[in-house]
Length: 415
Ligand code: ACM
Ligand code: ZN
Image 1 (spheres, rainbow, N blue to C red):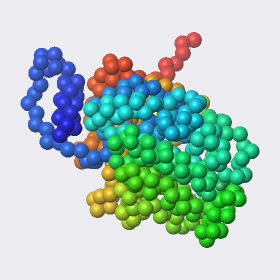
Image 2: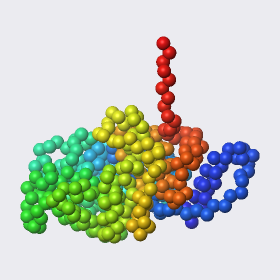
Image 3: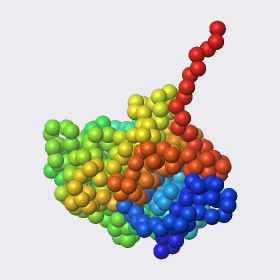
Image 4: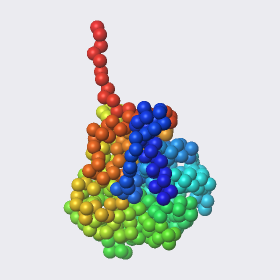
């Protein structure tokens, strides 16, 4: 009920914000609210790996999340561009670049918990690992030995699947991570592993495949996570992974879906969410909804807005599109019973600081907050459009950079 009381106060605050005349007179109309969230898991994801966010900035971000009843913050702390978490047993990991000390992370966890927010750590493996390969080049595949591992420049390399040192290093890492974060999940990424050119070409991985009787290098994913996930479980946590169904489109791998049942999956790839929903329902995995179509808050909000300088083809996701998101995709209740909630991503390649992060978050993050909280029959775009303005004004008063969604009018120039 700490959350219930907190959210009651947030609702009262929003009523006061939206009803300025009465607020000035110190009165509001009598109102009875009988409310509960549609989903228990309402998350935003920050990416301090790509651009570091000092913990003061993360606290500032949490302050705003809470106002909209988000209760999970996923922190993507390792990637090709940086390793952002102190591991006491392996200080080499944080020799380059900024990072959070364990003390800072514990303080963040505490700060978040006081606001009913759980922090879920993400350490992405086996791809997105140049920062760890820079510290420990011997953990890469044999044929990539000669490739310089330059944090922030080299991409698409992977940890070798047939190297005991990889598994012992991550055993140490995950044991420390589990002791910092009380959340029940550790997110291990698992996305965008470029398997064919790494494990598919490595002599060590090839010999492992032969030994195991595997015919496709993608099968080594089972071996890899089969070694890593028990460490997560031994530490009393459940694994969380990006639901990676890209391989399913290859004819040879029609049914490459063998995640263990205790893995909580996040659907994200454009176009693959309906399939992901169906497969997870059938296999009994809990699913979090972060479809690229609606919840990738790193995508531009309108044409010609940032991140045009760094846009690899990210489609425009307008506020209206973000609002149209139904986390159940309109399916019958029985087919969405395994959905735990929603997650908005803020991949930060093109977000150099917290101001850009909040600008990309709001107002679309208000739309996602509503999708996570409110049943579809109570949602209405026309109503939402009116309701966001007092909230945007309030965010601005609090010093939060937001995008005000007025249409840009180009007046004809006088001649
Ligand atoms: C992802 O966007 N790579 C999960
Ligand atoms: Zn290898």
